Length: 304
Image (cartoon, rainbow, N blue to C red; front, top):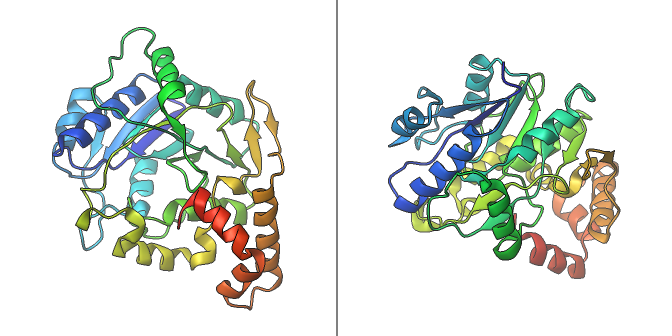
């Protein structure tokens, strides 16, 4: 029985670049030990890709009125069709290596409830990856030379025990907000939120937004407004990797994240929101984030 079930709802395989990076990602998943893969949805080319890679394909995922899969349905289908102790929702353009599984093994058994996440590395990938012997070392070297560590805004995967996230709002996949809510939910439930950035390299293969209306980024999409509403408002989607309660250091030791100016500012903001919960969100933000801090945060994390 595999330890981890990775599940995802890939984009259509119609754009040549999107198709190529998704096949790269999915192939990397199938090479992991103690892992099974479930692909969800009815996008063009998905059934063929699943057959080609020998992974499960479940087409009947519930979608919103625009035909985009709902996170709630994805979680339900993954639970119903997995025998693993751990589930992991992951974006279909993410390359993953064995250090990912090692991180999960180091935490599993030590904590009953938790969520693993990390910052991603961004890399331009223009051709299929050759998954021959030593591919992980070659890829890691390329990332260190040519890639860049993404800002800690949101996450491209969440790994957790099956008992966690039993109730998920009908978020739309591929739009902003839901990933930040996942961190908020874990903090609300007092689950350890474990940042694996020091010990795990997950790689995002860069792409444009031509698959979205107008080619605009997902945080400008109308479905994002609905995600924010379902999350309970802007305050609940401000959570990022900075809100992790632990880090998985190299060597497998769980430690508290080192304090930084941005982490300190974030803790002040959370304290003020809890203390003055009855005040408008913007008022708390103006107190917790003076102009000089807003500029710094915007520069590092964008407008999410």
